[in-house]
Picture 1 (cartoon, rainbow, N blue to C red):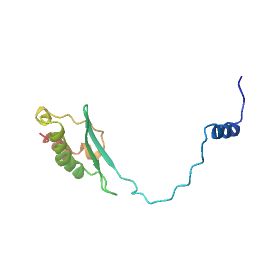
Picture 2: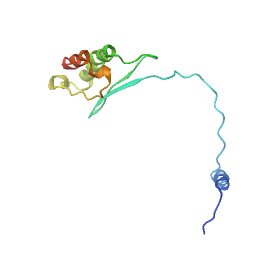
Picture 3: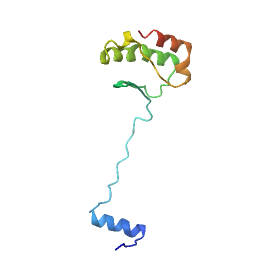
Picture 4: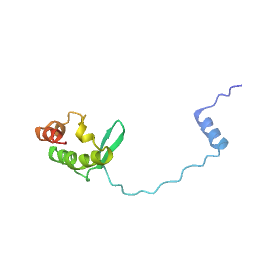
Length: 110
């Protein structure tokens, strides 16, 4: 037998049937705000999880620095020998990724 109920009746029934309590009001608290996260990974998994400083934007100089220092170290530690074999970096066409300075950094990653 099928019982037809309004949405309000169905909600009331579910609350009673599953012994659902109403959620307590959460306290307000200050968050860190928007933070940018850059993830670098390959077919085997995560290589680098890099959080940008609050308010910092991705410039070609900063992106190149992350590639040259953090990503290079992460590849060396997590995938030994991979830099010698060659690394293919796939990224979008955002301006910091396509500037000549960045492209030179990518070529020099070995």
